Amino acid sequence: MSPSTSRRGVLVLAGSLIALGVTGCGAGIPRDAQGTLRRATGGTLRVGASQNPPWVDITADGAVDGSEAELIEGFAATIDARIEWIPGAESVLARTMEDDGLDVIIGGLTSDTPFSAQISPTRPYATVQAPDGSTLKRVLGVRPGENALQVALERYLARASGDL
Amino acid sequence: MSARGEPAPEFAAHSGRDALPEEQRSLLSRAIRLEWISIACTAVTVTMVASLAGQSQAMKAAWIEDALALLPPIAFLVATRRIRRGPTRDYPYGHHRSIGVAHLVAAVALLNMGVFLLVDSTISLVTVERPPVGLTVLFGQAVWSGWLMIAVLVIACIPPVILGRLKLALAEPLHDKVLYADSDMNKADWSSSLASIAGIMGIGLGLWWADAVAALLIALSISRDGVKNLRAAIRGLTDGVARTFDEEEPHPLIARLEQRAQEAPWVLDAAGRVRDEGHVFHVEMFVVPASGEVVTGAMCEDLRASLHDLDWKVHDVVIAPVAELPEHQAFHRG
Image (cartoon, rainbow over all chains, first blue to last red):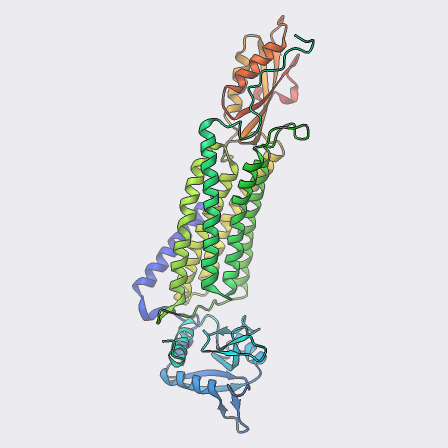
């Protein structure tokens, strides 16, 4: 393959993808790499919850409470989804997500999460001041590449926080 | 007249800049301007991309790429400054070779960029990285960030397309291989932006691998350009025969120089070796006088002047009268 052939190849690829994108435009883009949003809509959203009050508070009887639990329940209602709670530590949940076992993770995560390879942080829904004076951006975690789910959740968060 | 004779008439200009005729000198000033514009454009693009993409890993890669694109223009500007100096006792050949060094720097930068992209996209494919691209709120409107990235990349594409073409147009009349390599770098720049556009569209359609595959294809062609330029730069610096600005063939001037030397009435045979010093050539011409001819300094001097007048690139000429052509130099005998 000569340099000009591979350049032409990419040009054609870019052109046809843009054409595809524009013709099938609007609500269709972005799509999930693995169809999570479509699967969860009217079905089950698998949410990993990591104990971290007041954002996530798992009670003795296994019920999940806290501000982020309320947020994700609100989102699930918009897509008519039932939530399946999977409790665990952030590191364990990150690995489960990598193995495709989770759709969303909550647990008072911040945008500088060390698990950014396994968890895609949403845009921040709140900015808070840490005790040491630095600013922390509160985020939820989405399965990376599930961009339809990510955009839908971020849109909901932006409305909830008044950005939209 | 002293016993050593008159000093040779000085038709060869001193510094690399003086060696250029009026037309080439104005082309060089244009090239210098272009390279400053290149640096400014790259700086703006880097800021634009960095401000949009924040913490994302993919954009860190884009930043390294952009920084590499700065190297050829910087090398060019340093080299063109350096060739203003004339020959000294420490640098008897002058500083023309700085152009060759700049060519090497540009070639290594280009190859680096190709290999970097190649490794980066291969890792993404092998480890199945599915790039997340979320939502941006812009003036109270929710927009998929992918559309914004595409818009920025389209804008970032335009300057390297234009600058690359302008540089390529100057590379031949200036015989400047740094400009040639830099126009390859511009090509690498816009084509990798194009690949990113294809990749982001692919991500939008749920094809997580599109980004890496597009980058991989472009990386192959950038690496190829890098290797081509690297070989050319090394060949030039290790005294390979002077070639055309695009390395396509040995420079046609060589045959014309030998022919003109052979046409001198007192010359029976001539063979030359010509190396590219950067912009200008260094010529050593072995000449065999016709039998019975007594070679004088003035005759050699006339021949030197005549060869020098052939083209502005013929900068530094040495005439070596010999009884017969050194066997290992008589290539034109085929």
